[in-house]
Length: 340
Image 1: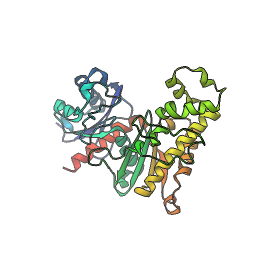
Image 2 (image 1 turned 135 degrees about the vertical axis):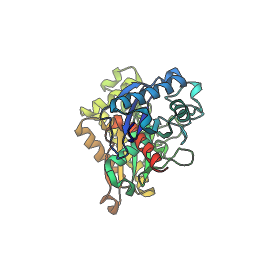
Image 3 (image 1 turned 30 degrees about the vertical axis):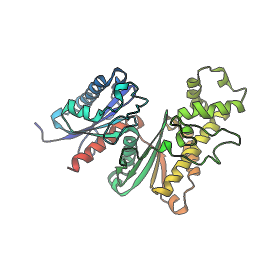
């Protein structure tokens, strides 16, 4: 048996799992996305078994034996505690009652007999973005990440480590209330979030925000827009990004509001943690280079950094986003081994 050892990162999603393998020197041994069904809708037992299968698939791809694995990093969508216990109120991706208060980290650890550490998916992506950007100097810097998807996930990294908070809820940037002056039009209703708050970042900068808040308003301003002909609200919202990439005026105005909302969120971070890097991830930046650059420029303009901050700050995208969660989870697992 070789004395070499490794860690694994497993990214659990609402429909797919993906995993990777990381060496102690920081080399990822899986260079492509290896996906398998997450089976979360089949219940906790099936989902935990699927996590093990995703881990084994990555190990087989990397040519690593399970006996060589020192730790496994696991990330899932939230809300969940810092210890990997799904919220007692449930979660969007874990809707069945048996998931409420379920210790998914502990269940995987018991099944595989290997120490498992937990991060939520946005924190894991933020951690990977930080280490991918700063490399060996990652412990010297801090960063903030906003991951725009169905909701708005976020992550805070300080000195190369994720800030989780006492209950694991630190970095829930989507539910930070932001000033809407300068973002909303005169007479535009203040957006409401599914969490019950009004005017938080997720109520504007998310696919759900487009569907529930932004698009219904903007369609009243564009009565002849072709999206009026699409009956399904979810499909209408989904098409906005494609139309924006094609230069559609109304869709670009929607994304301009989203960019301003992310900028306002980062402005708060600039005064609170003063990070070096601001990362944006999600479908909004998995687009054409022209649209991505326009969106990032709009975000940057809205942050309103002080001159001293602007001289050193970086606004960029989360790299390798489809693999970022699993890779971030693996980085967290590696740190847990090195800290022992």
